[in-house]
Length: 177
Figure (cartoon, rainbow, N blue to C red):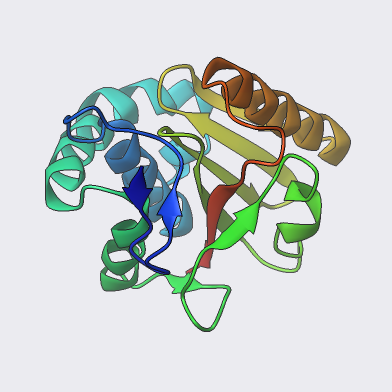
C-alpha cells in the first residue's frame, strides 16, 4: 500500500519499487503550455512537434523532480497556475462523479487526473474540450457529452486494467492561469 501525501491515508496501488513514469511530467508540462496560451498545446498540426520536443524534455525533468501526483500540485503552483480549489488539494473522483467535479466553462481551465498510477491532462478553452493522453496524443471535442463519455470510458478501462474495486477513487487537480 502507498501513502497519500496529502492525507497520510494508505491508498491502493503499488509502484513496485519504480519511480513513476514520464506521464506525470508530460501532463504537468502540457497543462503549463495549455494554460500559458501555447497554441501548439491545442493544435493537432503543431502538437507532435511540441510533444517530441519540450513536453518530453520537461516531462522527464518533472518526473525526476516530483515523484507522485500529491507533489505535482507544488510544482504547478510554482509555475504560477492557480488551483480552482482554494486549499490546493485534490478532489477525490470516481467514475460516477467526474462530471460534477469539472470546473465551469466560464474560463479556460486544465486538469491533472491521476488515474491508477497514470496521469492524463484534460482542458477547456474557447468552447472546445481536450484530453491529452501521454501514450495516445491530443484529442479535441466540440461536443461536451462526447468529451465526458470518453473520459468516463478511459477511467473505467484504466480501473479494469488495474483490477481496482468498483468504488476506487482517482485524484483530480484543476487549474486556471
